[in-house]
Image (cartoon, rainbow, N blue to C red; front, side, top):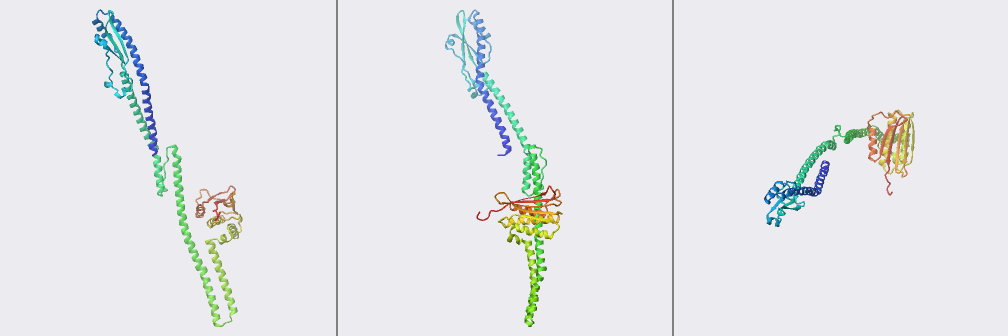
Length: 448
């Protein structure tokens, strides 16, 4: 069920219940009202009939008494008068029955009340002889008709008011939900990948904050998407550049060395075929081959280090970080590097490599861009379970500028950590400089 239907249905049901309650209340009091009016009418009719009969007794004849009685009997609400003349009518005491069929109210409504009339008989005496009889009976149909008319008028009034309230509620809800439709349109655009959509300020206090958060979400998604595109483009470019550099190294470094080894080996073979004294020549050529192989090993180690640090597999994360920091200390002797690394059983190559690359990127930024004089690296366990580790890299450099957008290095670090369900935070230290923190849960080892 839609929110709009609910908001309209709830007051409609309440109004319908109120209308029904009002009708029930009116009907519950209607019989008491009818009885009160009939009793009052009968009391007034009794007084008037008594006065009329007193005047009729002074008449000289029965005809004069009946004539005076017909003239003086009043018309009283809720009462019917009938004069029975002659011995037969007086003996029969016939009284006309109440008929609700000709009344203004429906027959079913009239039958809700007690239609049995109350009867009062008054003899007409002339000279001590009863010449006629006045029969007075109650008539509740007048009051029942009034109740019906009032009830119909009240129902129409309440119905009109209910329709007006429901229409006003529907109009108000439609206007109030217009921003919701705008939000729905905005989310549809986000689902289609259009992160440039922005919502106008919503003039409803309860939804203003939602509109602002939507615009902030759209900006963030657009920024993340743009960063991801930049990162993907940069990764593709770096991959191609890495392949190009490796190809150059293989061509420029390993190619000539391998050609030199082949040439030296061919020279040894040639000397042996010519019968020249071999020992000196072989020793000289073998030394040259050894020097060439050393160059191959250095080139091979450099390429492997760029592809994956061997120390990480051979020595573990803590020792690999110490070796990394030592390399930077040798490369940048004017910066004081320090490392404090606990032995941590990472248990997953991806986690260890990610933490190593984060430290590597932080050291690169500190040495090349921060103007730092001191750089600290810390690897430690967190918590009692020893399944959470923290890597902390901080320097005393110039810090991060305000409004910094992540470059490729920071984006790469963030994506590495996020992919392993870790958390990376980058900020400025209160004492000056930059602090990078990585919190990561270690995976469970097999059999645990």
